[in-house]
Image (tube, rainbow, N blue to C red):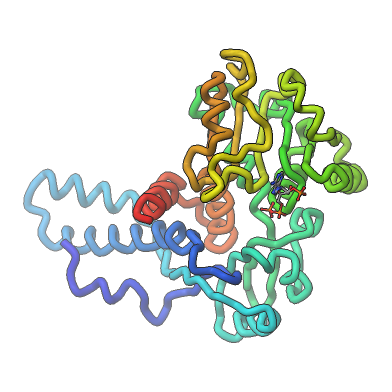
Length: 336
Ligand code: ATR
């Protein structure tokens, strides 16, 4: 079906999106965003090719299907930029010079980049980190989509389990967050807008400091509890959603968990949601233990996809198909 028009995938009107970080070679963001951009372009080329010769019902059906799923003017490309620390400021200036339209920001620049931006969105300002930049009319504005990405992932998890996802149902859930680093901060900030959130961490002072900070900006539904308290595993029973935001259990240290759920009685997690923001491995030991005790579990791919989808919408104004994004990631991770 495809022809020489493939070289038109990137042309003189293509707008540039990308991700900056250091190192960046392992970033999954290019695959995830380009899956939307290129699938659309390929569908467009295929529908143009079919339109020249519709001589069967099947071809007509395929044409109509492709046409109905096309997004107009989605002429972008997404590139990874490995930026050394001394070039961070130059990068932001150069992005304007080169007419780059949008950037994701990853480790180690989510905080440092803020000083070079013209404007910061209110949520990103309060989280204290930026993972998305929009360049528009010579202005750079920073956003943080991590927390909202987590919220969308939780909503998706509840929807797939046919649970009522009205605001009041989600708001009534008590959340335990394991960890008090950068990822925890975005998640606790977003979820403590409506939900009661408990933070626990190996270094308790960090959990306490996050609690104090969130309270200082008006998020009252938050407390912090020492990690030791959860040696009494019954204390977990107070929570509807338990989230691991630490790196424990991530490849290659796949045998580690912050809390050992295997000590819980059979079926004790039925009706509860256990989430890990790790996606490599797909199922951490923590999630496996949770699932064995009856919990509904979710790995970090959903949060990754949803934070990406929100960034994509900030840049293009379009809601991308998150299933396409997720499948591209699964394929990429399976190929490694
Ligand atoms: P991120 O930005 O991915 O959240 P981070 O800011 O470095 O990463 O935070 C890592 C989190 O994992 C922290 O909560 C850290 O606990 P400490 O604050 O005590 O360092 C937690 N963590 C990392 N290694 C851990 C371990 N071996 N045991 C328990 N918690 C650990």
